[in-house]
Length: 215
Image 1: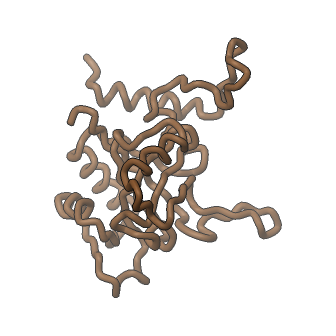
Image 2 (image 1 turned 60 degrees about the horizontal axis):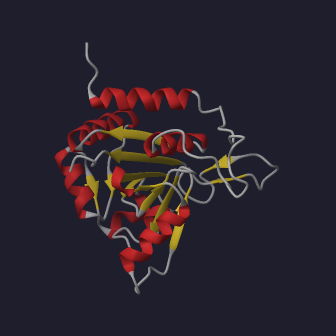
């Protein structure tokens, strides 16, 4: 049976994640000024592998309908009662998925799961660039125990420098007052050198990546 494009992408991602412990090595012929090794995989696979290394959870979605199905499945598995989201574009997706959500300030302190967008995804480190210029602002990146990020493949960039260049072009002379990176769930080992997740922010981080290359 011939594989669909989605099956090929998912197979490549699964294979890369199985081999996540294998660290790429610099080629002997690499120039002396090369700081990082070149990318051996696509940005999607590289990002997925690096995100998983820092305990993030990655879900690739071939299109919007696939995103809806994946969201429905995870909400059912995790038994989430509601999602807090202030982004009307994401709320439209939650509505189509028949997933209960709220955006009212009075529900903020009771939220267990929040959904936001992002500025860019940095493949090299599996990091997510967010800013106060987003509709979700600052708080939803920090307060919920579970943070869902919905992004598109067009937001993937290789390096941090690429993301900074893009965000400068996007906002021009009106840069957000806060631009930061999220790399996996919040963690600390300050107490007796024991790693604790969720100490200063979300304990779980999901990234749903939608393929918009055909749009």
